[in-house]
Length: 362
Ligand SMILES: Cc1ncc(COP(=O)(O)O)c(C=O)c1O
Image (cartoon, rainbow, N blue to C red; front, side, top):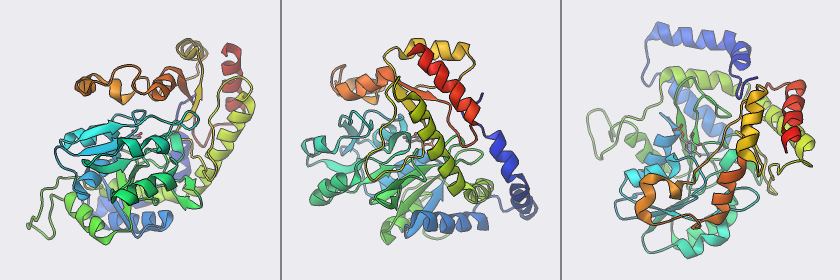
């Protein structure tokens, strides 16, 4: 059994994908070919955002977003300690400091009630993460931020395709950032990502930043980097987008089936009111998590831990002086979470086999 099965999906999209790839190989437009603009248009329509700016990874989407809103050395950026490292890493790369706020017990997303007291005169952005595939509670976060004139950058690396109160994840705040890492709900065949915004000026800045700060060829009003989306990856994403709504439905159905089978035995994911879940990860909680992982592995069931060490306890953040006990809800989650195999092509038999094995050891 695969944790994520990309092979079945590949067989499904093969004819269309082969045609698209052949066109690029024939044209040799590997950098900024027409597929990239087509992808931006298709992505913007899907998210219902004025601008989609595809680029090289989810990490670069976050980094360039912080640059576009002017985060500088000495600034502070509020985020969650229970996320993939990149969320905080990009803050530190710019010489700013991540300021962590503990998470909600049930969704594992940043707790809006704790944000206000973390805001200081140095706060330059808030990054809620839509962990595992459902959005954080965006309305109060946007309200707190608007009252202080602070931009909100949604880290939607895991939630592309999820809905929040009738709108799409990544289209809910100043900027939304997606990752198209291969195992994400929408993944390419390498690294990729995108930023979404309704702000024309931010969109222009992002387009420059991803291409060395150029506004036109060889004219550089600002320092940027090379964070361009590859033409080949754009083609992969365009083809995958044709089946994506169907895959999002399959993910929801499979997640619901897991929950139905496991609800009495373990802590299953809570879907907050107004949210749909794309289950980038189907993550349960078990007190005997480490032992469970070993037992499941013996039965041929792959699992993963997202994430075993909260970001504030990472060695590189030791200087922040945030020891064990600083964010107890995140720390408890890190000790108990375990993600089960999840992809749109899991069969009923596979779901039942995983659920039975989990129940046996819970
Ligand atoms: C929450 C979160 N943020 C950021 C990233 C970084 O995305 P990428 O791997 O595309 O750089 C990831 C991807 O693993 C993620 O899960």
